[in-house]
Amino acid sequence: MTDPAEQLRRRELAEFLRSRRERISPEQVGLPPSGRRRTPGLRREEVAQLAGVGVTWYTWLEQGRDIHASEQVLEAVSRTLRFDRHERAHLFRLAGATPPDFAKSCGAIPPEMELVLEQLRPFPASIVNARYDLLAYNRVYATWVCDLDAMPFEERNTLWLAFTHPAWRATMVNWEESVQQMVGQYRAAMTDHIAEPTWKCLVTRLRQASPEFVELWERHDVAWSSSRSKQLLHAEHGLLELNYTQLWLDQRLGTRMVTYAPATEETRLKLAKLDANAS
Image (cartoon, rainbow, N blue to C red):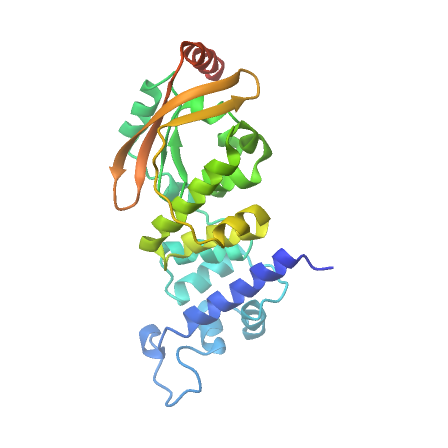
């Protein structure tokens, strides 16, 4: 029996390709005008020809058939349909693949900022954007819940981890309150990125992975960051009571450095142990 989530992903892939094909005129890709068309944009056979793939194969792809698309084919389709880097990344994910340069595009943090992160040890610190992508972090943050470096780049997102990673979720003492706040902040921030595929793609993935996310997302609540304290339950060291500070690096993208400082002497000693283990 076909997985319903897989069916939804293929249907979204089909609709995405169709919508992008219909926005491009023949003249934009160097084809002669062919008179009146029943639908706007390119025909399927024209996309296949320009991308160097079979017409039948591309038709199946756009129909959401259960076929495997290679990285080379996805690249060719991306170029033909003139995708920007966000659309290209969205295509790869919908096709069940990871964009080859995903790590590079998500980790575009100046080297000096990574040096600052390391200098903040033993305090855990990270750099995130408004989409909750973890762009960089120091060694304490990298290992205090799980091994972030061992994760695929597309899963290094704190909203995704909060709903789908059991160990990450277990550290969040006030999980329900925290994720409600996070979802509300994501919806508020998405107002400025409503047409960007990467934002919509994360929502799609979370809807498929978590009924709890679906329930919160469909409330249409919005929120802004207010609290400056956090409690985490570490698997080895127990309760950590922290105060966090946000240093904004790019207000437009919501990129900020988040540093967690101990709120108690007991937590300070625990962070020192975590730092020693991370070295």
